[in-house]
Image (cartoon, rainbow, N blue to C red; front, side, top):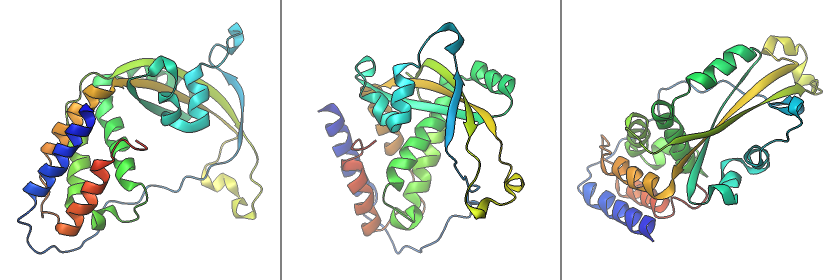
Length: 232
C-alpha cells in the first residue's frame, strides 16, 4: 500500500512539474553502443566451497533459474529487493580482489541505476524518444544519489568451461577474444523494499529534465511509474 501511495504521488508530481511544456525537439543520445556480447553454452566445472562438500547456495541456483526476480521470491529474502553485481574473467586473483573491495554504499548507486534503467527499457526501443530527457536525467540522478540501507549478504564464484563455437560465424573465434574457461563472481546485495521505495521517490522528485518532456512523453513516463514494481 505504501509503495502505491508513493508512486501515485510521483505520477502526480510529473504531471504538475511538466504541465507547461513547450515544443519538444527529438534527438538521440550520443553515447557509444556497448560492445557486442556473444554468449556460449557453458558447463560449471567448479564452484566456491565445492572441495568442502558444500552445494551451491539457494540464491545462486535461483539466479541461474530466473535472475534477481527469482531470488526475491525465496523465503529468506522476503521483504527485500535483490541486486546481483557480477564480474567475470580469467584472472581469479583479480576477481577475488574486486569482491574484497566491493562496498555496498559506494557501489549500490550503479546497481540501482542499472535496474531502474532496465525497468524503463522494458518493451521500449528508443527511450530517449519515448520518455524524452526525463529518462537520461533519471538515470543520472539515480547514479549520483546517496542511497543507504544496501547490505552485502553473500558472494559466490563459479568456474565455467565454454562449449566450442559451432556456427561458422565464429570461425576464427580467437579474434573475438573468446576463452575456453573463466570465473564468474556474483555478489548478493539486498535492501528493504520500503527503504528503497522511499529513496526512489526522492530520486524521481529531484529529476530536472531539460528540455521538459511533452505531454505524450509525460504519459509514457507515468505508465511506467504507476506499475513500476511490476516486473522490477
